[in-house]
Image 1 (cartoon, one colour):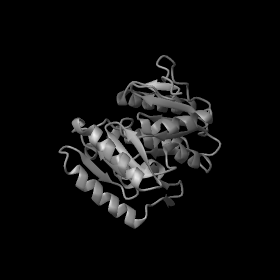
Image 2: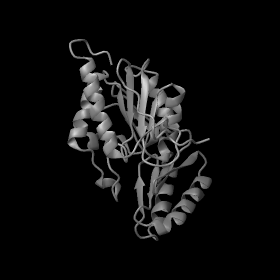
Image 3: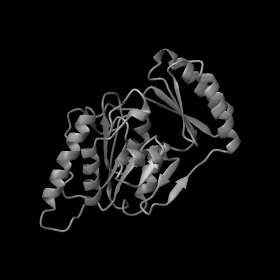
Image 4: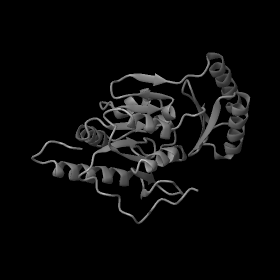
Amino acid sequence: MTQAANHSATLPSLSGGLYAFFFDVDGTLAAIQSRPESVFIPANVIDQLQQLSSLCNGALALVSGRPIAQLDALSAPLKTPAAGVHGAERRDSQGEFHRITLPVEVEQTLREELQHAMAQWPGTQLESKGMAFALHYRQAMQHEQDVMRLAEQSVKRFPGLALQPGKCVVEIKPQGIDKGAAIRDFMQKPPFTGRIPVFIGDDLTDEKGFLTVNAMQGISVKVGEGASQARYRLNDVDAVYGWLERSLLQLKHDNVGKEFRL
């Protein structure tokens, strides 16, 4: 059963442990915008992520519904291990890519059908990710039920696909792909293996990531309101920035005059 993330508990100190960090992007490292292409990560936050990555010997990954190419553009010049499209594509610490793709005929047919249907609903937006599709309705909330019905019908027609609801969006993606599986894969290989996972996210798409991290006795953090499997909570994106800054100061203090252990 989904539980309310703990509002009152202070996030545990990161002092004295070996940690691996996983961050969602939209709504976590970047404020939600009216259109997905308007999202940005502030330059000082990118710099802090770079410092954190160095402190943990590269055990930091972005885990997002966005394709990896978009993650790289948003976080440049930082380039981390990453899971894009909820894990349908993944870049490991060696820079090697792993991708799950849809059959060409399925991708083409589904894209054409979705484009045709959503053209009837002004304000909705179809985002094609190659192996997945995001149906956005943030600017057309009156069409939420239309978009959901379209997505449900599409999944019924094409076996092997699944729905992933989010904030003002529903995604169509391959079955068995989620952020929890992506985090689990990262944790099985260096530099992540043997570390305590820390995952921060804000959306329904992050819940399986929280469950995976909880099972590993890690630190799961929900950003914003709403019931969640996460064990801790930060109020908003600004609170994430504050936590990141405080954590860096603590880690740097802990490591003054000695070899970085984190």
